[in-house]
Length: 509
Ligand code: XMP
Image (tube, rainbow, N blue to C red; front, side, top):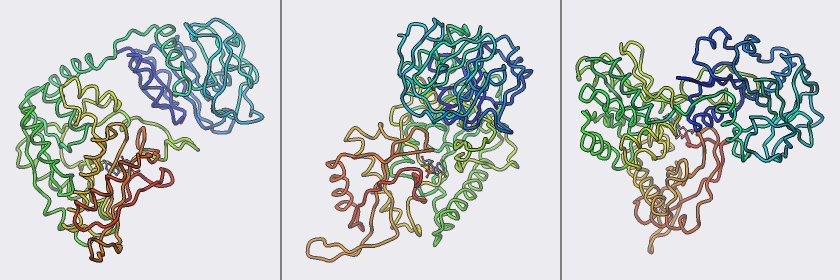
């Protein structure tokens, strides 16, 4: 499929660029910034975008692209660092600016250009740069200026550079600029839709799997659920899903999965009730990392046994998505490189001789959700909040006992229930209850109590990498506090977590 390639120079917005292009119904791929031009030439390539990045183009060891890209005969758009690199490689000059330009700015479009087609001459944009182009390469001309720079946008033939970030929401017409580039300049059609993806993917799954069988570990989360629905649509009963109940899941979770998958969708489902094994091994364990390790190891063991019992399988279906597979090189100062997830319990050992079937490898989360919706999965499944693989274990600070699990599970359920009733649940990234390892004094009726404390955590986030705490309405907080203390035996105090990430994390362990 025709595509736009984004060469990644370590911008925290690289994935946002890719998503904006896909919103224009054009397929985009993120590749390492040093991908050889020869490799790019093999692709059905319609254009290249050079991302922003934290480095200075003139610094020693600064990330470069293969200069061969200028001879590929496709349009190139350089964004921020990308524009500076374009100027640098093609003979212009880049120098440190007098001051960093960060935040909102206004540009004036001075020359008609397809890049700014159907846009007013004055545009609000968002900048974030220290260096700037001080001399244009030969043949380039200014297309837009800002108060701070005569080169807010530059162009020569099929090459375009912009100093600002069109991909972020703070550039109100940024999407138009991206659309102008991919449609107007690169000539891409509107072929990338989830409807065409599903059709294509079903054909591909059938061709790959043939008459073989596929095993899939269903977690109840969005990714594995959509993968199950998609693979099932392609090969029906050749798919078997295994749901491991580790005893650390939310209230009603197992029943919900069984009802939706085995019941509604008619997917073959095997539930492994392994709660005893998990809870036994976690007995007395308080160290968060040890908890995670035990859970990870036990999961693999249980899944392995379940797989053996289920018979012969050639393929292991997985809900891997694009952010899991993008290959980037760590670039100094790039926070995105550091925050790669430590997660995913699903890492099954190599000795399990499966071939992986990952039909959603190319999709972003919003695309996975769209696929799920088109396949008929309910909103409660497609739009549910993320839940960590180790489950309630990382929300029970200190030792995990059946009593403490029951308290956390019940409080968690009340939080979700009230968030849904208040119409906020689907608007925030995550909301949950955490059981603290302290007891406090309270009074109930005439009696003194010495009981547990629940902390409420509600965060907004785009991808879980950074997060801010949600300013929940006081009325809702009051309801949560009253209900948790009244309905959950063993709790006499409720607190609110008002920390953002960084420096805190979303989960408490
Ligand atoms: P933290 O706590 O690192 O969490 O800020 C970021 C996001 O990741 C989720 N999370 C996990 N997801 N397995 C998962 O599948 C895990 O072990 C795990 N730990 C944290 C967390 O809920 C949040 O959305």
